[in-house]
Image (tube, rainbow, N blue to C red; front, side, top):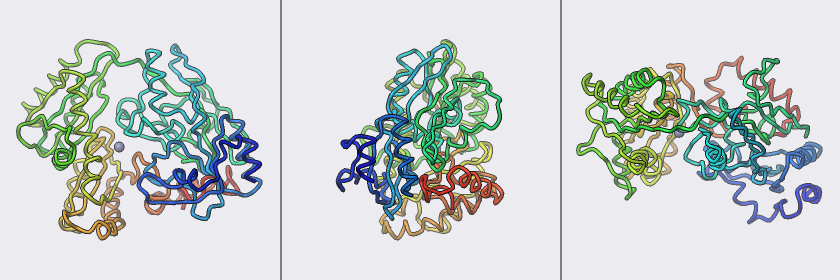
Length: 465
Ligand code: ZN
């Protein structure tokens, strides 16, 4: 089997030594550690197809892996080891860029930052942007339907795809690489693979949507009395700017405090501490007037008692410094001990209600716990992370993971929300998803899985209970 795999991808790209396999068998947080017969690094769609066909014949599981930056264990092979990890790292060509059609065709292993750069070099924008963009790969972004910081304006990864090429569980290749804005010819099959986390096939290439490059950007950090003010200011800013709001990120006081304590390069631009901050960014491909619009929105917000104070970035360096406050939250939280995470979404208008219910509920259930609720409030997506009480035992605290999940996710369900907004299901959230998803919907998912992958070889043990 190993010889046959090596014959397909070349001996140098069929890894079997323990030390070579190690980085592919564990995910970033160390929550899961799997095993595999081999890691193969095919260089073409045809090689991926040949590898999958061989694994299908041998009854070996196929585990696709991109940059291995996922947060739910979706890219880790199962412990039993009867699996082959298929790394997309060498599928890294930009196949085409059509600036008039505003499309770019990229292979699955392209690092997200490289896709962004290829677009920028042609004077256009690929807007998907997230913390791991320097190492995550576009195939993984699409397979997990990644979110990030520009969803409010441009949508999730799923919304940025026009066409797809995928290797199916029997080794056949579906070429759906159409660069069409309109294609009303039956089932939209690409959406089956987007967000499927490799359980229905391996995405090998995609036609991605591009956008005009922003020529002007206005960024403000706004001090707020409460999260209700944030959603009100967002609605006002969307209306006043002709929907030019690109990012809207909520930062709690404790997020700033942890950042100041742990990250030497971080500065709080306000002289006094405020309970909440909102990072609001507007951008437009038509220069002129954006800053004035933002100033008017902020002045009106102060007059209406929605904002206590605000600063506007005067330079790109200041803009980066404001973003640093937001990006520093998860970084600083990591240094503060154990963290129980929730990646939840509710309707934007109901985020304040969610926070008002979930915060006291977890504080009552686990005295001393520190709620660090931050993130993409413009998408209704809050990273409702719980930091351990100061001085508590890390493991004792992490043992409360499921109990805290139940409290938070019950409130999310009550608000018609989602228990996984942008991180996917992987292994981590299978039971949580099954608990809250409509049984008819779950059954449909199972029937699709069975129809496409009757032998269950594609990334088994992920998503579906
Ligand atoms: Zn996020």
